[in-house]
Amino acid sequence: MRLADVLEQQGSRDAARALIVEAQQKGGDDVALLKRDLLQALYREPPEGFTAALEIAQKLLARRDAANDPFVHLWVAAAYGQKYLYLLKNNGSEADLKLARARALAAAKRVVELAPDPKTSVRTLLRNMLDPSQPGAAPEDNDLEVFKTDPEFQQVINPTLR
Image 1 (cartoon, rainbow, N blue to C red):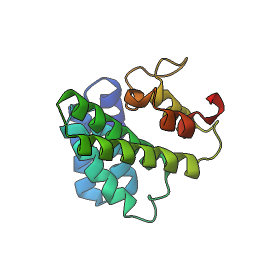
Image 2: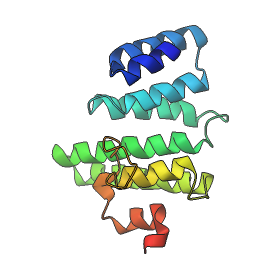
Image 3: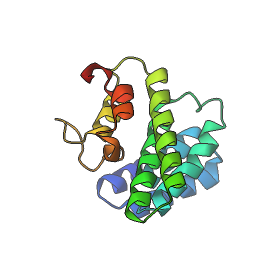
């Protein structure tokens, strides 16, 4: 797993993913490995990336030891944000767009429920995903930016700005 970290930092996401898959095969459905795989999937090209992320997320959410992890819900929100943007760019149906938006919003709400302190790292990441232009935000982590002007997302993620 340390080698996967190094490869990921060097930009070799495919090689890091291969090591994570190998570790999963040896270690079964270890929660830590599934979470890493979920995060890694979010950096793959759409639609493969968000599709894989959502499949992995379902495995995690079905587990008692992961279902209440705010980071899992953060990454679910990110995956649905990616899906929404992909659907927008590729003439997705109105029903599919509404569903992706609703699920992204529900996941964001769950992050806030599980991490009520707005100063936690998961809440900071959630805000940064909505507005990656904030100081200290990573511009590539813009998975929710498509909802930046959406009042419901603003109310959930940045309630003090209202």
